[in-house]
Length: 400
Image: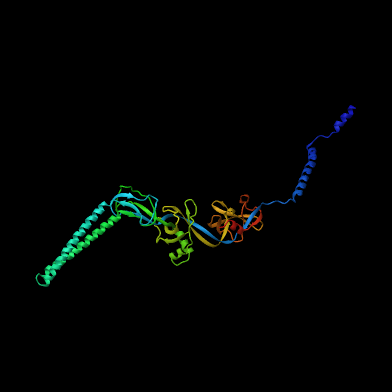
């Protein structure tokens, strides 16, 4: 029995590397076969692509706007200055008050000028008495000369005295008139309907015609002037844009302009550009325009600031929604859809813009299709499922 066992142990083959390979090979082949079967089984499942809206760009009329800083002035901003010297006795109005033409604003002490009036009147009476005396002398001498009782020279002398007395009367009358005018100047009235500005003087102040500062400014604001400036480039565009042989004719063809107030609201009334200055400013390199706005409700005041928005009418342009663009390194791009539904990022040149659209100068042509939204999920060469979106519907819901 022991010998049989020993003989069996001697017949067992030794465990080698070749034996390990022989054992592992069937397992590896089984795994590879399963993987191939799994791969071939999944090859029929379709790959899904993102579904994104796509718009077709085309030519459309558009209106763009260019804004220019402006300052507002009343159509008549009149400085109120005294024409006589004296103490300011009364101030009849307050700052910001609305006054009518001819309404009293200030009263200068008039006592010195009333005394001048009394003196002038006395001088007039004296001159009139001298004239009367001279006329009597002439009337006495005239018959005596005719009778050859006195010489003609005496009569001529009397007539000369009469003429001198008449001239003195005229002079005295002028002095009375001047005194009356000075008395009238002591009450300062408003020359126009308008609003009173700041009043830097108080009752008791010494004022006069040589005082450097005005008593106040009365602004007639039924119409408001808005002054704004064109650069040389803007002025050349203005000349090319509007028809007319002269600047005045071109201004007549300009459309109404808007006034954007300091809070970015648009003033309800449209304005009309009326005039342009005769030359460019040497320091600013700009030329000044003036637009007028109706201000019957008095909402605008002199000294306000704002922006003049000048429209520019474009007959046809390629309009691209700003949502369909993205910026990269200061350039504006869109994703253009090719025939194979692949997207390609394309730079565009923006010639103008509105609140919601870019007007394209270069980079696109009419009929190109661009991706409207979902740009953050795209890159060059990506394939999408385009969903057509009408440009007309976009323009109706969100106009240029």
